[in-house]
Image: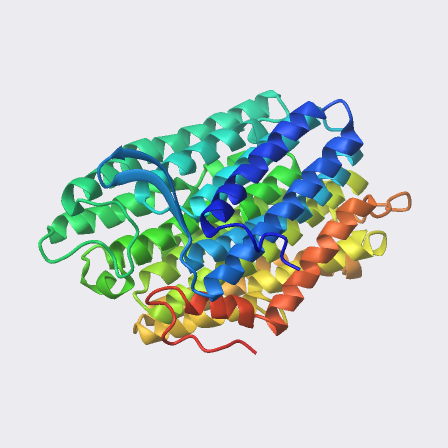
Length: 504
């Protein structure tokens, strides 16, 4: 039964944005009653997911859904419009909000974190801005809520309140606001002056009358202006933000911030430039190869990191550029792969961060070199880590297989053999920095030069943490065997559906 069936499409959009705000208010009001506070957080998260499911149902039924808030000047307003790519991102974010809330309850209590009310409040505010980003009808709306997402997550990054957290927060805020002001704002203004509109439109908004040189410049400005996509050299904010608690890392890397970045780039390329027009833009190949370089260089850096969260952070930088590369290949199937990678990377990477947090809570270890033999005491956690790792690598039968497959086929379709090579080499690098972790945890090679710690008193993390990482592990498997609903949704995205058939 759909509890939202009698609600108008316009109101569904408003509810999706406002519900998390209500959740934030409830968290503050119930701050003195942790059990009730967290029950309210879970209830609001679950309600939001049902709203997004209802919006998804309307999207498949091709029911138009728009909402207009404020007109700034004629033809320029804060407005929302539901389209398939936004629905895909909303599904991922709203589902993972539920799981991350469950995880956060176990982590924050198990780790005796302070300021838990502030944490859950800012978490809800971040999801509200994500919903607004998902359904933005134009660049102005996207820009406003993109910036609000940065501001709402800053208290989460600096949650610990120590010098390291403050330093990480300054880097986080400095790079993300700096790229927005220096590049993204200018790109939005130049687009308005040149095209006379900021409204996302199928096939793009530019025509033959616009300067090709300006359009080429705008593509670079948008790619670098969306700093949350972490394209090198504007990627340092992401590793710096690893000073935050692990649930925040999960939020940053899978649910909200980085996915908002690559989603924004995908949406701008599809609805502002148009996929079919990319091959005619002079700077497309330049940004494509910058993205490819980011894929490889960040993977190489990941191998050198002994700190587990730092290794996963640089892995995220690499995986985000898979999406950027897919968007810039000027191929419908590559864009489909990039869209699908939003979901497959989300479930794989959040599993890895959940496992890192479980290790921190149960074993108090942060370094890869300290995890030898841990699998015997924390088998559920390390099995989940292996599943998440294989999904990120793209090995069947796990979710990452399909998105990487489409990206490779798209690169071949565009005659970009060097991108195929980059994807293959990157996959080998993924193997090099991820798989040794669970292998050493379970098998502890006799020739290992690293210390085998005594784990006799270590046991699995609290139940909410285990529940969350088990759910996301199952999701990694489920999206391999049942990818069709997401593929059907991607088929509805303009200029992305032609070559996409099915997964399994």
